Image 1 (cartoon, rainbow, N blue to C red):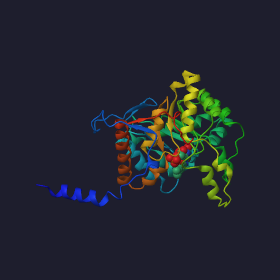
Image 2: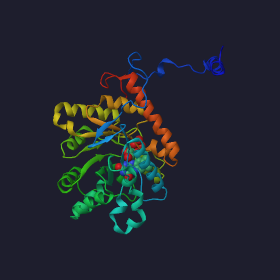
Image 3: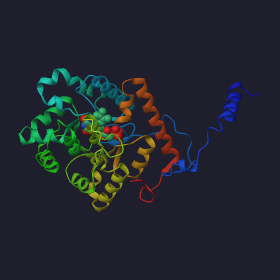
Image 4: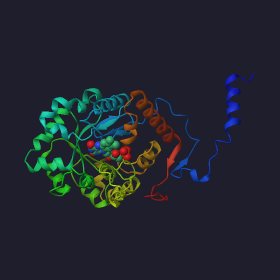
Length: 344
Ligand SMILES: Cc1cc2nc3c(=O)[nH]c(=O)nc-3n(C[C@H](O)[C@H](O)[C@H](O)COP(=O)(O)O)c2cc1C
């Protein structure tokens, strides 16, 4: 006796088979698919990772985004609630507005997410290199320690964005090199430090200089996703596509660079990496993470932002990311990034 469900399924198969065609060019060449060796993953399948001294239940990271503006509080609170529910780490968007005590009352709660996140997940404040430079030059490094203490954060993410600042009409001009500021910061700051870009990535000389600093980690902020040089050009409505928005380094390229730097100096191993910038889905993250020889998590900004207004939507998006990663971990083996024709 054929039950109703079975009958519907068989009809679907006949009707949809013609629509369900693939062609050889579409194959995702990055993985070996090995279907023989595992049962399906389930709720007990472990994706956990020890990251920046804390345990995350899955290797995903909410990359730095917003705060200090109308809808930011609601978005941030949803993101923090998500981190708590799924055991993820989070970086705040620029906390610059909180450096001025006058703004505290109005904006502190946009950023005050530790009570929502709980004590046991990584949570980082964020400032631009220009603000850090200013404070250090003025001898006000205690303001940096104070910001992290007030937010009960684990440390500070500093974004290095000279191209963005250059194109921003109201942007800051750096008075000294970022590496000089960062060296000074490492000496004056009590908490963990992560350094990131904002959508251009960075080259091997910069990565090496960062790996040599006593910082906790690097977030790639690679080229290939949200790009703040381009965004600033859009803001000033220049219709000429500036060539500088196209320079930078993709996440696959940066993974290869980091691996080479580690080979030359195994002491770099202690640094931890947030792979971000143009990560479209869990498979991108799984491929890069499998290839990177450092402890890492997968960071996304735009994708989380896309769903952040509505908690149920955000939750569904994240569940999908997690189950895709579980399937990938169960049945896919990432090929070596160097052996493949990766579009670096
Ligand atoms: C709306 C928005 C605001 C952002 N603001 C910050 C910021 O304040 N500080 C920062 O370090 N990065 C900021 N970023 C950059 C992201 O952290 C990330 O590096 C970049 O968007 C690339 O990731 P994606 O391709 O997944 O969006 C922002 C990104 C978005 C989308």
